[in-house]
Length: 438
Image (cartoon, rainbow, N blue to C red; front, side, top):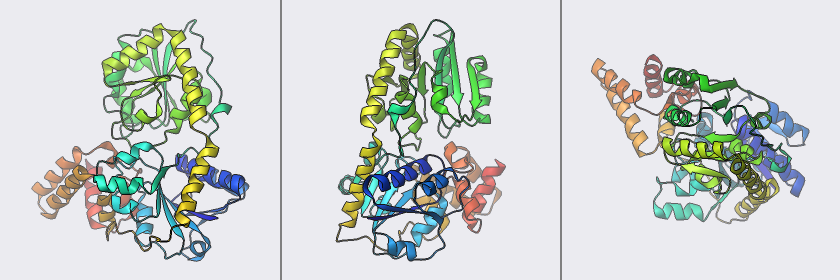
């Protein structure tokens, strides 16, 4: 089977997911995988890894040859602006089409049903995606019949990771976090949760690993809790740093876009108990024997305090978390599910064809992946600006001040990201100008 992967890039978690599936799929079954990039790669680590393992990677030149070679075309989607343009002009091909969704699709970016329905099969990276509230019950059932879960974990081998050895003979009680450090990913009340824990545990230390974010650090500084925090910046070997943690604290924004959450898997594989929020994809990942799911700052503090006072329970839960990940998240089984889905799509007699109609302009492509509330907000912004008056501009600015932080990111498929990618779109340009001025 010839499998053609279409992706904007091979960076970060997406690169790990696609490269892992392609390399191991070739090794396990002999299927041929090729990867087409829609943009020039900014980071070439996963590109080199693929090439070293006989998986060709090239930037697409617009030609039809790769599509005529393929039995299955797998589109990796997380609503990158460049991918939106590709979908609108999907090249004609006799190959089966599979959509691999690398965002949970429930919060921004929301996966529109009409996008899922334009493919022969859909791959989710979390079971949470099946619950999409933007779809009708009939639409959810239709997707469920054509979808399966293929985690974005690449060639993850949890049994090979180092394992935490607990020794609570002294020193601070360390609650660690690894990942994105901004309020698009972190819970907006993160500081309140941490304050509640600090009031109960005098020896507490929060160690946050990841590219440093001025907004989060300012919030911590203004709270007066800075002495409890260590910001390490990016580290090359996150699992090795996790061995210094006692607990993995995972306080994410309720509307975060994450799916497989590889750092959470790594933390549990290393033998760390998890305290996370009862929400989103986390509720499908943290087993009751390996961690706690909480609903409030008070409960977060109580659970951390309990683990601090009972180091033997901390160690026991860490071992259970590790055993759960080793038994559940198996790379070979993940690749086998990917191959099953591709073969099912290739065997279909009623193939989906033609472009994916999410709109005619970049502005419409952006609106298509908003939920009803988000779409109403940005359409109101457009209407206010169309008046051309100072009052209209101020009304638009007020609406934009209240929008979630994800839309003000420089990348992450934000409005600013769309505006930078399509500077010719007048609506995106005018809204982005106000966002930057505000």
